[in-house]
Image 1 (cartoon, helix red, strand yellow):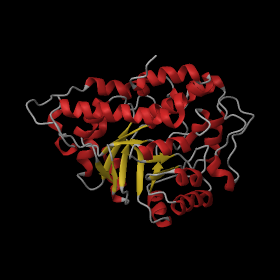
Image 2 (spheres, helix red, strand yellow; image 1 turned 180 degrees about the horizontal axis):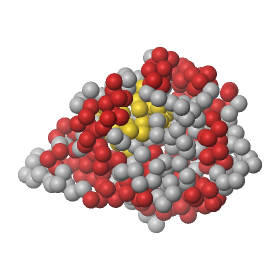
Image 3 (tube, one colour; image 1 turned 180 degrees about the vertical axis):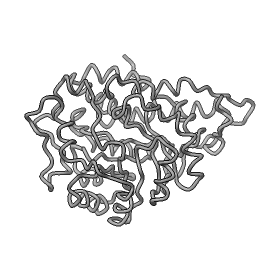
Image 4 (cartoon, rainbow, N blue to C red; image 1 turned 90 degrees about the vertical axis):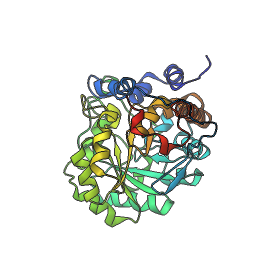
Length: 356
């Protein structure tokens, strides 16, 4: 089968991956209502295109947190990429650099920060979970900065781990040869083995700090010179608090539908968050982006850029670095086409009047 869109890559990846691995990547919390709605919400939005506009020359590039990128599509943090391909996060960062965009590296990666950044030709941001062990957390921040990461992305929507029933049924564990490599210095690289359901859920329950408040953003800012983005915001009042506590950016995210099921689709809450922060910080969005038209809709509703996660994993599973490169190229091509058909030759022309 010719793989011509993101859905084709998912179909091919599902046939290639072990069921337990595919289910881990693809699943959402409980009934997976939010998982499905993240993309379905984009389908409900219609584009009112302009006609008789010169779109013979189009520019897709933009600036995100001071970094020039070739398109407003970034690589979201996704865990355990070496389950998809032996090169894992290293293949992904090479593809992201080749595409001229930013990769966000997960705390829960199978490759170390240093391995990934050394293979990068473009900017790398580091996604951070705040552990009960603040010394281990501070160590991760210091390593990310020393390695050359350009920003920290702190995930704030997981004080408790969402119940992903596919993982429970599969009793999900990392393969023996893989670990949470970034946590090896702190001795926290392995899942507990004797658990009733998901080894990852048991691991996160043991290590994640459930007592976090907004003060943690101030603490993180005191430990690093890097800008700090807050990922996992779906409320306007929380977005304002993030700005008040010094966040350099906000990522509108519901963790890919993997935390609280029946939380709203991210694109539905984007406009109120953009309005609430009123240009005081940059707003990005993830969750459900599968087509170039989705990118246009997110930009029109105020996002600076989007992040894609699962599509990257499908490309990685199918063909490693080449597969990730191809997925990013598909999204670029679709976005370019959608932008032109909307009568826009640059991102600043993608405005809210395109939204029906």
